[in-house]
Image (tube, rainbow, N blue to C red; front, side, top):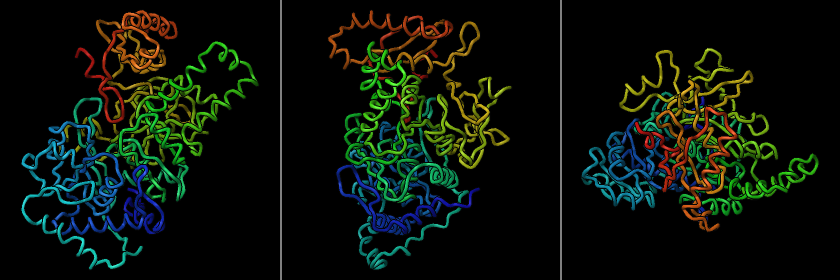
Length: 550
């Protein structure tokens, strides 16, 4: 158990950064650290007067916003348990999750609440708006009375709020902080119980190893209800005293580039999909030209060209960032190699919700090509194989970051964490002698080839996805053969006036080119066009189980 408390980090940052900007929605005025303290203390009064106790659950459903962050901070610093729920779930799933979590209060976007009903939420006593914290609906008159009198009571208690008023719950690190519901690639939603200790471990490591200082600007665009975005675009920067600008809608690459240009963030977190789109749309058409390939092979000239490409790409991300951290899913191997060649300041990390989320990381100038960093100092990570350096095995770990288990699901917890405390990630990899972790795939997605060789479909997909007219792909096994499902790039087809018939012919050429590049046992027998985007998890990983014959 760590001595550093998550709530202590929050208290310290608010006191030290009292007057500076803390949170704002994109292109809107925001809240100072002082204003955040006021809102937290007011919500604490509301919780106390409505009978909420330490350890009680409070659910939060809404799009990313400064107010979303305020609710999260208020709940956890009170000593209650926050249940952040992705707004992408269908109404019946939202209802099921709120009920399963045993939440007593719900904060929700008003549009989302219109699709739900208090009658179906067994334990909920009050529903409050994330837009203005006002009461939307309640059971009985208690919450209504408290909300009506709250502003006046707060003014009487805190005539002028001061830094010394920022003293929150003394709840210890072993207590539960978050229940995170994720759809996951298994297709079964489970509530991951993240204790205060896990939040503290993630923040402590980030503060000691990631390049941010007080006042630095940060852009938050990943889903805050997911641990990756929440920990590293919100909680960690908040404890440093950064100004976090939140993009309140799911951003297109164009909106992201625009926001980066205006805000010029100092640290950027991203899922691979965003970076790969920029690589494929902006860089690949240029570096694939025959003349450019020749120039990039000439020493001296290639250094100049790499420098120009790097400068352009750096400007795309705002021009002022110290590092771009990619995580959440496998990164395209070709894109990674090219970025490394030109000395771009990026690195690839590895984590999962069950670790709150960080498992491994290395700075851009110490990371190794193809690796996902080295284990954080609060975890022991190894490979379950006879030779962890050479023979692929399951990545297993134990330590401070690990979850307390799955909420009300002891069976799933036992399947994940063994009797010796090792958490089985379901991911496959090797670790070199320097401790660099190389992820080879998910054990659930691994395909055993006819020759007995292990096939990791992600490796094949990373090659296919770089080809023209391919938005994304999924490799599956049918009748001992590999089949590539292709979601076409309809925008590119329209631009180049390519018909469906022509696409079939182009994809057949693509299939042969991909097979030529890969070992024979990884050859794909045929491509099949999939007319819509593949369904994904919050981390933007394809839900593979939906597309197999099983």
